[in-house]
Image 1 (cartoon, rainbow, N blue to C red):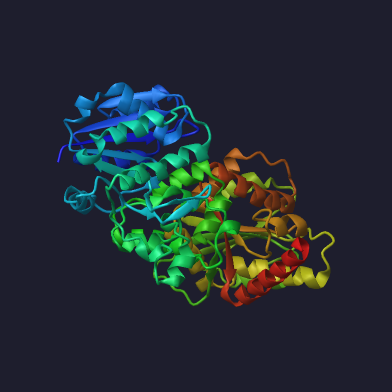
Image 2 (tube, one colour):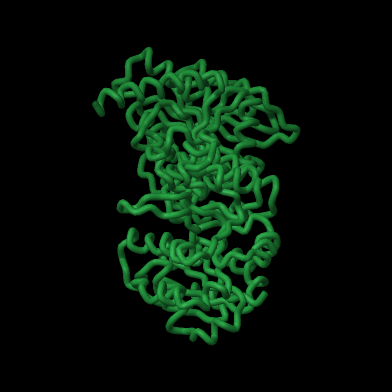
Length: 514
């Protein structure tokens, strides 16, 4: 099968990420010729990344979306006789991650199809502007045979495409029309994934309602288990408020875990990209990276940890002190408490917290994780509420040695997590709404991140408690700037409280929106 590929690339920052290069590297063996089209000007370094794989590189203004780019390549760079030398045309873009598995089976399948137009998935029968359309191929990855692209219908379609369109709805209609013109002429379309169970004609009401025909958005795990080689990029950014209530909310998280255990694909390529272009909180919610953990977890290897505990409550300080171990746990406290323990160190009020912490970490190079906690400035919070919230915050950070082992495992399992913090409130505004309101501060982080944070963030508080509290807030910023997640953790016994808070929030939301 002689095949030519047309790849469209776009990035608002003009950066070619590793996942794009991986895609091109693994699809190139199936192509005799590859055309790379960039919708936007690239710097020389980024352009060279693409030209390494492309036999022809086209750079154009960002107009007309994918179909505008494909039209320019087809009609202005190739004649009909040029394309007639190929058995198949392949069109694809950069809106997905993968391939998760080899593409051999997919191309073998379509090598033997008699359909003039094929794709991986299709969208079910739909009505647009009062007109009924038959199911159509989704055009993030699609191909067509000579039986279609040698026909005048094919070129009539491309002549009607506005390559300068800046209206996404206008560009989207071409996806529908492409399949429609072939089917009207008696041709047929083919998909690699059986999408019939998700369409209106299906008897499987649950799946039909659940996915509302958008299989590539919400059926990731189903797709992967049935040989789908990609994960659509938009799924990581989808607005939770718009998701149908029947959607299984852990589908994307389960899909990532599936890839980890059934593929050699480097998940970090996904995280490097999405955390560069999107807010980490949005991605965290899409993946359900909220850790509810217990204290029955044990690991054989001890990991040295540092706890900076600035609290006015002796009970909490005692709890941390009791966890110290010569090889694993160190505690730094204020001078207002006196403890006869070799692993407890004291920070004088007039000592610069930043210098002390950096020197301490340099001396104790076995320390791999750092926990900081300060609650001495609780403002107007009533004492009863203050004690309850403080206990929850503290328990979420260092309830026991076993709990801390589990915290460490969370970091080990996902190297994109830079900060774990107590999830003590339901907030639709930001991650640390309660911390800002109640003046509590606390978080876990890795040694390397913590040291870089101390070195690069200028915090002008000499007071240790103010410094620690501000350091937590800066930790969120640092993680966001360096493509790392800031993720909540909570002890398992507090999960029921969170569920109750969610129910209360939903009731209040209903009252507000009436």
